Amino acid sequence: MRTKIVAGNWKMNKTARETEILLNELSAKLPDTDAEVMVAPTFVNLTDAVRQLESSAIQVVAQNMHFADNGAYTGEIAADMLLDIEVDTVILGHSERRAYFHETDELLAKKVKQAIEKNMRVIFCFGEELNDRKAGKHFDVVAKQLKNGLFDLPESAWAQIVLAYEPVWAIGTGETASPEQAQEMHAYIRKIVSDAYTNSIAQKVSILYGGSVKPGNAAEIFSKPDVDGGLIGGASLVGDDFMAIVKAIG
Ligand code: PGA
Image (tube, rainbow, N blue to C red):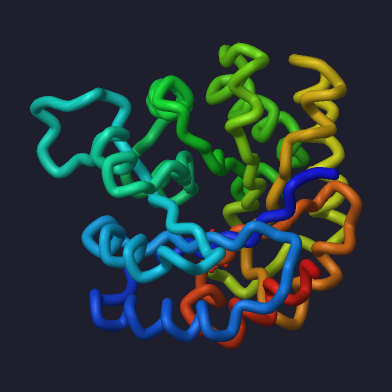
């Protein structure tokens, strides 16, 4: 059985007070579930979020981190700083980091390596843009992102990796990949992980889908055999919507 995960990526939203209010609501309404439930508030609110969720099953994760141990990197956050506040999972490679902050596959490979060495768990995001899909290049784009970002890792690192396929054209647009498109890509991802490593690693890695997952479409997407959960943006900012998505995974 693969681990099921529903993770809310809050992006650059919610003040400290708003974070507290939403986390209260989420812990009060968290349904019984086999899935791991995660939230990623902004850096400045992580410490308080961890404290607030101390006795909750909801995990607090980070949206990004730097590849270096420490040093002259103004504005950046190091792995040890996250671990120090008991955050041991980090989202890396989100398409907004790639597009707006010019994070390349090579940079992401360094960040992933650092997170693995620090014994952290990584939710590694990747996905094609609309032009790629229109040109029929989506499989190649995804294969390249995975190869460049992850395939230098040793086999042992894969226990710490969660994959998040997020077609860029579906993020924040209200347009979702159809459940069939998600399944097709997830099955392909498992195949290339199997080819690069082993079938056992490919069968064990959780692959999340992200891109306009909402209460109304979550159950159908999650019902697909190779979809192990979701990375949720907009809908994770509304307590009832996020909890409805958690319920949809069962
Ligand atoms: P969305 O964002 O659910 O708002 O489309 C998904 C994501 O960016 O992870």
